[in-house]
Length: 405
Ligand code: FES
Ligand SMILES: [Fe+2]
Image 1: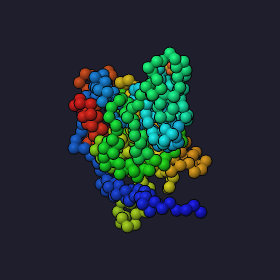
Image 2: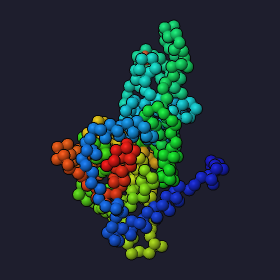
Image 3: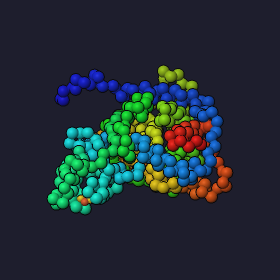
Image 4: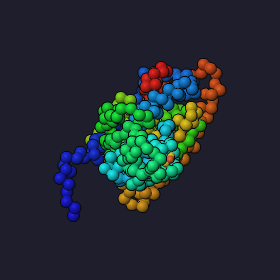
């Protein structure tokens, strides 16, 4: 038998913490189910159509959110070993995120310092492993710390010596199993400050243990925020998802817990209705789960489908122009892949979710966006008080880009 790790007793019991949090959330949910209520904002929020269609606002979001904010480039498990790297190219510049031989994750522009060629020509969600990267153009070679270690025809490059032409670094840090990158040069990322007290919520997910199972890209012909809004309310479950989540979950009941710019939403499944009127002492254990939103563009769904069988879904939404969304979607096994059956369940979770998101959520987002393009000049959409999470997201984005709603 393996010896017990002496630090075990110092490690929080995350499963117990999840059970505890599940109970707190459930208490709020059962109150809502009994009263047929949901968490609400103070009132409805009208949004002028240009919030989605406006070119100036979009340019400001590109600049202030996608180039300047710390963004989730991947999870620890995407590049677990020294030499593993991934391509992160959805925020704007093509970026390489590499775990060095020292175990530290760094980000560099995916750009050779000779004449700017792409070192790795594949696109996201490509991952690879290499102790050195050789440019396809003239074969300059870099190690996995970003250092230039090989220059064919060196005699032609007086003054461009090894050490003087290393890869161009970008701010990058790894925290709670998430890899954050800023897609422009600048100060280091303070992930703890960025997350604030949301860090304690995210810690429950133990994301550092998650192992990728399946990844891909989902597309919407819609502004990225229109697509993002679909993750923030359960008001559409019964109508839009009538044959899937609308069958299994309450419509328009949600508990939204906000943590600064971030939040966690819980949408109750039908079984929680059985707890109404039952003394809390008699409540059976329920599994922890939730939809975690990380400002500005990342959704992490953590949940179980059958008792004890968890999966983690990560959606990272990026604009591909003002009217296009590119969603990097991945399904992870939260605590590793322990069997082929379980891998199959995670793959099914990818396929089924991708199908619903693409065919239902992104379908209405694409149609709605097309309508906004031709809507009357003064048209406003309206987010109801029951759509309180998207309201908060729009307010925070508007603040960050310095353009009031
Ligand atoms: S551009 Fe990379 S070696 Fe020339
Ligand atoms: Fe949906």
